Length: 139
Image 1 (cartoon, rainbow, N blue to C red):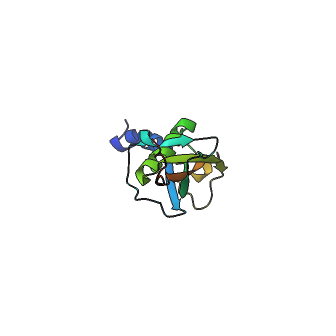
Image 2: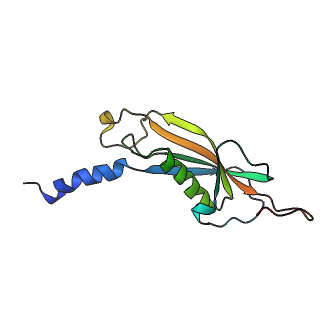
Image 3: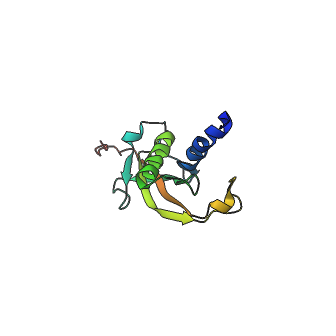
């Protein structure tokens, strides 16, 4: 008979194996105050930055939480957009994909089992510059 703790262990391990982790680094000051916004209002660009005048405000990185993570590309792009929304970005320009082997600083209770590299993406949080007098504002 399984003890309650042993019965929960597979669920805990599965939950720990899922998901992504995100972090950001500020690059430049925003041209206007930034406030959190709904994720669906943050534009996502994959083929380059828009022509609209803007400032690169932060670098956002997203990575699988562990080598066991089941996060796929849509999950990671959603995480990029969510972090951009939390920061108050107008858009996130996807810069590229990354992959890295787990290292000595990666916490794991089973490092010998975590042989698969972690996938990730990085992108730039941009904030549109305010329209100059006489120019139409971006809608």
